[in-house]
Length: 361
Image (cartoon, rainbow, N blue to C red; front, side):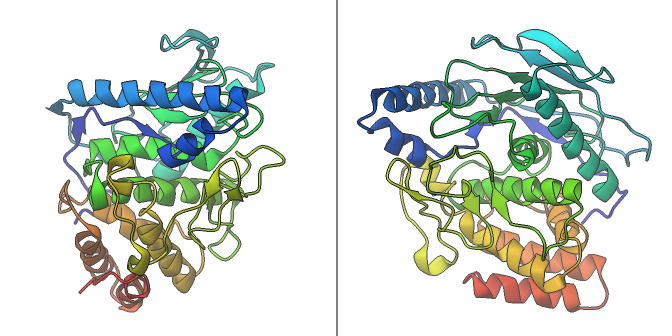
């Protein structure tokens, strides 16, 4: 395993499309009797399906430079673009690194969210941007019309404005920004395959670090955190608090327009499906809950010991791209033993995985 400040080989592959809003939510909305809602959902689904196809067609594997320990004074290089409700990327440049905030709150939130993500990875894990080598962070806002998603496309972030009735502006939740940018970190490290349990791990890793980015930016301990993904993203009147809950998977929303949150918290309720690349957004609730259990058992700031263990596994070179939950769990226990000598962390990891029904030994 690498240790904080160590070297790691960086592998880059163009990933499949990874949007924050799961297809099962959009499928439900697409069947709604309100044509405006169904049209927005259908357009989003059609776009996302086309994007997935492009990702599969253009998938490549290239080697980049070795990621060196980041200098403590490393700074982000952010550029925000306005897609002006079109789909041509990146759009018109509207804010560059170091420039003052403008009148567009969406632009300002995107800029701040990119910065918060950069800071967590730099300060907690000595990682210089997404690739570990100072990759510029680019984002396009106001993408398409009533677009109900945000995504990392392999090179940059893209944010829709939402439809205003179910979803608000997708820059409104810093954990959403951190989640999507972490797909980039995974792309440059373990490159977990986006199907079945490895795909659920891919989604879960993004949820974990998205939540840690939010907690870090707010100065919250594991006990103080809400452990919600996409809190504030649902519009007023929607019966729900977020897209997902790491603390209590399956409870984030229950709305006639969205359906009910289908995430399981344990392997007892693992969902077998061919939809959503084998349920990557659904079964991610299981490793999500394991991380929550570990972080709260250890206490303090979750980005410290619990987050460090997850980061060591993601970047250590032993995690295979087709890993399942048990593979990942065993590596977390090994990483805890390798980094910490007390035994408290590895025992807590074993217990957390056992509580969600995953064998980690």
